[in-house]
Amino acid sequence: MSTVVQGFTKSLAMTVLSEIGDKTFFAAAILAMRHPRRLVLSGCLVALIVMTILSVLVGLAAPNLLSRKWSHHITTLLFFGFGLWSLWDAFKEDGDDDEFAEVEAKLDADLKANGGATKKSSKDDDDLKKQKRSFLLQFFSPIFLKAFSITFFGEWGDKSQLATIGLAADENPLGVVLGGILGQALCTTAAVLGGKSLASQISEKIVALSGGILFIVFGIQSFLATVEA
Image 1: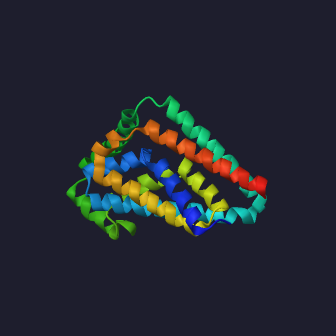
Image 2: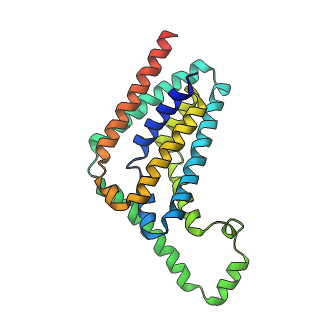
Image 3: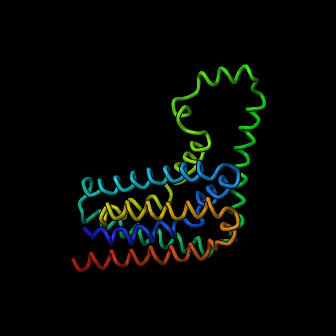
């Protein structure tokens, strides 16, 4: 098991390079342009923190399901796989505006669907809806829940989540949690405060290339640790 500092450093670097220019990054930027930034930031951050903790718990349980040797081998393969995946994305990337526009179009479609449903409802129905309002909506803003759900389900099964699971299985879990949360906080805050101006200036190709190189470096380091053992 590595030290907390090593786990923290790897997790922080991996998270930042995985999340900058990601679809959830663009989603946070777009939501922040349309809704109060405080609610969007809090919803996105809570979702990412919950996702990071869940991923680390899964990674922590992996050695109990498999031997430490096999979990280490799987983690090594994951690092190499994600590295090649990121490099492939970098070289086939057509442009940053396409993904931003894709996310924006999806959010617009959801907004129109919700807007259409709202117009059809009458004032009498509003009173009934307030009485039947869900338990969560009594305590959290709909904007908060929207930011949370878009971010949480957008990250579920994503490359960064799987990489966090693999990292937690091979590194100090506390360091992975702290590094992951700090990395998520930095990226999400930048997306919410920077908005479209920041998102449009990010070269997704360079970020993907840097992330791919980082994953491969992690893979080589993990492989060498196996050989030395």
